[in-house]
Image (cartoon, rainbow, N blue to C red):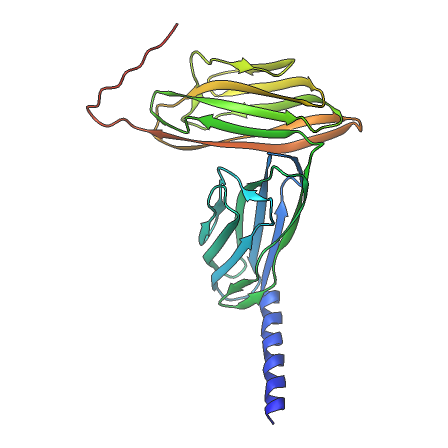
Length: 287
């Protein structure tokens, strides 16, 4: 009798899990499947409620594989619930998600690695008021023969009307090909503009930075040989308080084997603070 009850309990559990997996779909992907060392890729999750009822208490945890880290900044976004993804960390959590019938929940953040390899990212099971759904998985390749593109800003927090230096780093020291037409269309977020003077400094051969106005510009490097790293820096400023995500996407061609590579993101974050009222500020401009 006890054995029969145990079998029935197991069958009921498997049946409830099956229903939950039919009611909720949980998938993951990387926007850019292959990147160079030090570059970032956007990690995406999609959760869909296929049932006729609202589902709440949606949660899961993701312990990234060794060598893969949350980028700084993570630029994490979720359309519902609470997403905790600390910059530079190796684990993030999602909780308290709610989905009405037929709705889809999107979650994204950026990750990075300095070590070449294949990273298979597998989450925990997803749990909710509807039951348990199996993990979501996606694979990212970090290749030493791809251009490493990174971006940082210093200082990362400034008073309004002050300047900060935005730097793009390009690393192909471990590459074996020649890269051509490294390009990006730079578009600063509303509230940020190129400083005057812009103080442009480049160590990249055959590079150009051509602003079309105060907030947009084209950045281009004609070619980059194997074993080379270089950087381009310039100053930006803002008079509007807030936190700004500076996001650009790069493309280039690798030869051999004449491979066009696109949608390589580079991110940085700038915080602008209004000065304290009645404080005395000093600024000196050189014309």
